[in-house]
Length: 197
Image 1 (tube, rainbow, N blue to C red):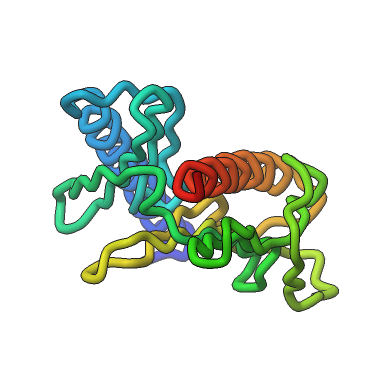
Image 2 (cartoon, rainbow, N blue to C red):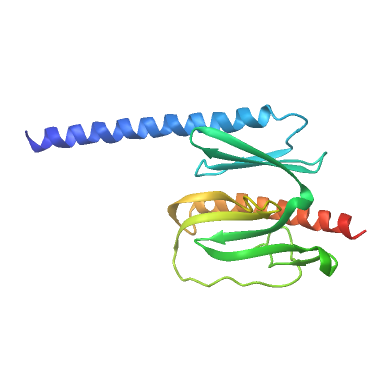
């Protein structure tokens, strides 16, 4: 077989693989959206499907509930929690902590965290992640720790590909991550105030 024929067959296989992956991803997104629409007594004011299509999150501000969805073995698992079930959140860029907020009920509603990268505002306390000089980023994740002994950690992925720090993809992903980190910080702060009163 000639090299040009081998390259052509290889190209066709790659194109077919990409088309199949796009179709699979589209179906996963539809499953998440359908699940959000079918939740009883839950009206999502904001929602996000993770970039790696493993998790999704939605918030119902009127009932102060959060819906966490997980994709596993072709099924969507659903968990509805109250605001006060979120114990902490941590924003990571390539596994380095950028900001962390935790709830410490017994200490009178103190929040521990770092500034939200110029976003929603400063939070009392401080936690600095490792500083790296790399211009390339592969992942941005927001980790929630929830009040659930069987499954306490829930990661939401905002970037799942290698890109430069000054790229449009990176900036858009970081802005979404900041937005949701800010929402969760507000949820923790507000639920803490309710508990303290």
